[in-house]
Image 1: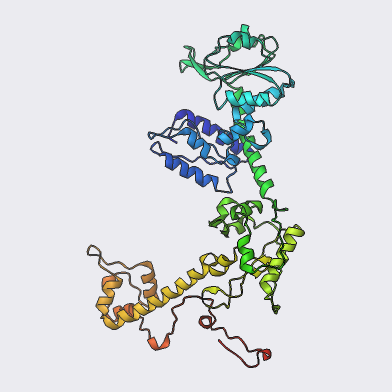
Image 2: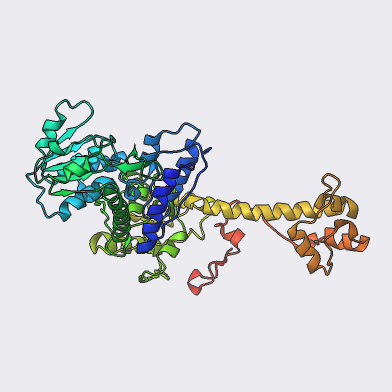
Length: 516
């Protein structure tokens, strides 16, 4: 957000590092007029994009509008928060859950530098100077859970030199130039300097030079290992950001790769005598459909919820899974129902229950829309029956998430449009129809794209509405529909046999009782 020179410098370093190792990285720039809502909207888009495995919000936010930085960092999905700044990742780190969180990049880089020395961290006395959310506090937690005995010092610590003198491992992130003196440091200590400060230097073209929080020239005489500034912790911070991004991609692939679903199955509580279908449907407590979606590996943006128990799966899922192997497709059809109504639907649902809950296979049931029920789709049930039914059964039969109503609405729209066109052509002359179809706006008439395509179909290659002859206007404005050639029903339910022109009863077993 904004255009700070220092932020652009850091961002370019990260983009360069990503390009060098093959990570596809993009810099999304928002102007310094961006509001908090603008930033949150951008973050939400990245959170929901399965092609994005990690992203950071460069701080500080350079906007002339008030923006809550804490709210912004916590808006980043924890599984994509490769900077490790969200409260969830910070909380997991503080609780020692290091394998299921992202660690802020600077402390992570410091820890890697310490490991590279070969010195055992466990049992060592560590001192961290600084308690910021980005470096000091997470560095304390990281050392603690690597079994060091950790002391955190800050601006109110009165015995700073004494505490520094006890440290086997010293990490300094105070933001004060050369505040830690060489004589304070314990001989043989590991010193990690996270500070970046500018001090006057007349020998430099810029008139200043960069120094750390530790007096390097004297400290290096006592430390066994010490990081320089610049060139020490800074490059490691960028490297750790790359590593965290790769880890995020690995976690994503492990979570959503083909394999057994991590799903918990409900247990049936069978009763005798068997209750009615509706009693069974209403007595069970369905698992929330968004939980089911997570358990079978669907991404949040691939699922459109319709309440707590129904959802649609977006077709974008097919694109994501296009390289995965196909499953087996089993069709259940041509079954004559038993006297109790056990037919195709009941068999389908029961078969899926057996394969899933008992044989632990990844399996879906695809049940078509009720095809021959009376008005409003309520009949014996196209959702199965007994303990082998789709629940909630009453909602499934009636609505099927609104698809039926969308079809009926489209049918009625076409009917209304045809009826209105016939009426207008019978009651208005050519010029009046032309004025309706190509109105004059501020004294100018203009054909729409679809009107130009219609003119071409009529063999009229003109784009100027004022250039049409009377004969061409007549051809253009009139469809000349003969009402005697069109018949339509205003549909209430596309499942109705009569409206779908379905004839049943033609089998010899029906004893000649055919009906529509």
